[in-house]
Length: 103
Image (cartoon, rainbow, N blue to C red):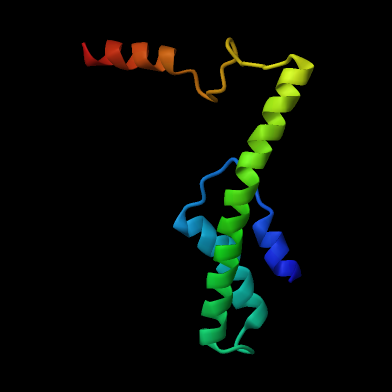
């Protein structure tokens, strides 16, 4: 049950891809089971953990957004990063450099 809870309580702001789900759920089970459990049981466990994780996200996401909206309204704070640049590489100088090389 502890494994199920650890897998189900992830970051809610990401959209898991199939590869991420395999890495999160399957790899630890394959390593820890290492031939002690039949493959059919592992497949069932992986499926069930995925279903629990999806159901948790479906239930928790609207509640989380409601709580965040209430807190924003009560505190009167809704922060936007308008002038913050998150890009690790400044692209404008690189673009001008590349355009100059084309001529």
